[in-house]
Image 1: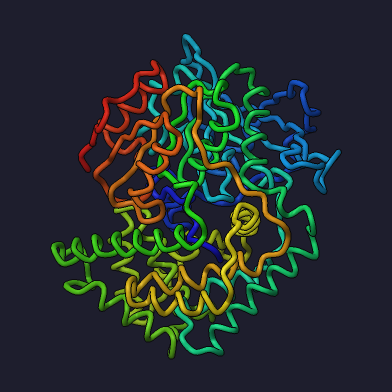
Image 2 (image 1 turned 180 degrees about the horizontal axis):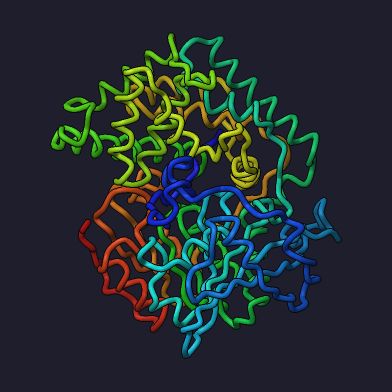
Length: 524
């Protein structure tokens, strides 16, 4: 794998009536999706889509639709290659299908237009996310101030879920990748992980060949303008989380005159290359883990691995290297699975207590809590099957990336980062092998000003592990029209977490009122 996926806003969305899902998927958004063929025929490029009722989408995701909400679906066709290069690419004349969902409240009045949403990843489903956001603030969704004025529109980007999905990594290889030692110290273990990534790359290259670069961010941003046209808006109103901020920033550079309002929450700095971005995440996760450890020491009654959470977690990973605990189904909680349970738990402050309990249970011989957390991150179902989340994640990240360090450079960086970021550095270093071994050309996105665009709201969380806070100002500055809103909280992304954050974002989306410069919202 490459950098840790930034898609997961692990808030307890729909927690009230999704207890059964929470038990199997942590409190992340479920990753399964309706069959693609249930979505109807795709409208040809440049033609209006045919919308049809699709209550089966929320039914399959969460068991019902939100009260007072209507769900309609459509599919549009977009060029595989928008012709961004000097010559027509390998997808010239062919199309991808993009799946859309439009959700409209029966209380909608004075409609402004559509709010297009993207959850990040790359690789996460915008269709699914729009469904979850439709359930309102009581379940972690959007406030009525927004749903009363906008249709909520989600789309699965090219290669993701229902939109001409990329699928080339086997369940066995994903199990091997997530379960692998996060810090392979011996040369043999390091080479084994590099060979696993090479095998994954070769299989994906054999299946998709020269078309792999077509899954990059700039192509997807051009698709997003087709989505804007399909919903009938002259200008785009957009809410993008994590990687979705990169997608939104790319759109703003390509189509600045077509921007109405963009909220970019959990900012990615587009100018960071593979090495700098991976180190930034290593630093961010170490900082978030330190925050968790301090909370643990101060709340021993709620944290069974107090007072030294770092020692407890490090010991658990070390033990898993030599004698992994076996679950009831025979699956072993290797060092990799324990490590990804830690990663998963840091996406929200609510995950901290769950991690402490999982590590404590593992010490007692029960790995179920570790598997629940890790599987929620990986998108692994109980039957061992994975969605195409990480197939798409690799395809997009590696198409975007121009930097390609050698195995030897990565091996050296692994050692350096072990000293600087002992828990997360080595894993982020060896994770770069994913794109190093990935085949196909590259299609980097632009990194400049959004000249001519209106003010763009860039939201950052001071304790964010996956998109560290430092990237917030960097993205705002790059765009030239960015206005920073800071949440002094923990976890990944901010809206709609508190009244301060929600009020500022709602006013911007609805009335185009830009928050005052330097606005900082308290954690609670």
